Picture (cartoon, rainbow, N blue to C red):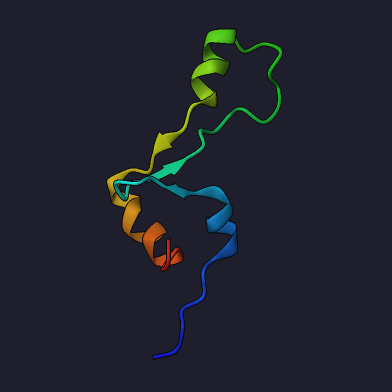
Length: 65
């Protein structure tokens, strides 16, 4: 079998934890931040788990991670 290629865009966006779960960044933290509260921006800074319905698609994009 030939080697599988990794989707490089996905490799930059997702990280795999030690237990094998896939982490992602939260949306709405890139611009227009002046009217968002500090609490909200703090929550958006944290990493989140990829939902189980999307996890299989992400794993196919990252065959060796």
